[in-house]
Amino acid sequence: MEWHIINHRDYIDGPFDSLEAALEQAYQLGNDTRIDKRVRRRAENFYIYRPPYDRRERWQAEYWIATKEAAIAEGVSKEIFSQPLQESWY
Image 1 (tube, one colour):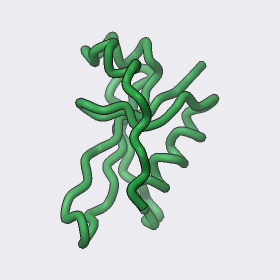
Image 2 (tube, one colour):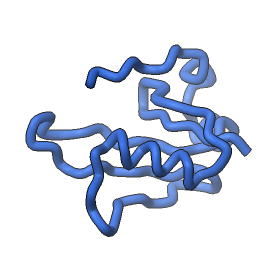
Image 3 (tube, helix red, strand yellow):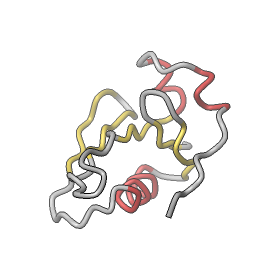
Image 4 (cartoon, one colour):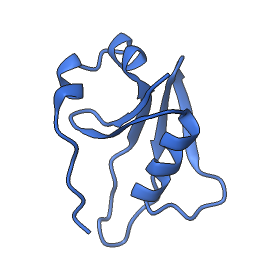
């Protein structure tokens, strides 16, 4: 099963071989050092990760970690998966 990291308008990264690998990458993207990370299940094979408040950015968009099929079933556009990956700005 392939997992992807997306948000409401952008494809972020993927595919990953497992949910754990996708979550680990999302934690890195969110610079998350919290012990209890904020992840909740939205639907089968669809999770929402909320990164911590960032003093530089002030706010970070949540990441959706989902399989393509689960995301489409939840109303995410198929076209989002054809977008190129975002370039890192670091």
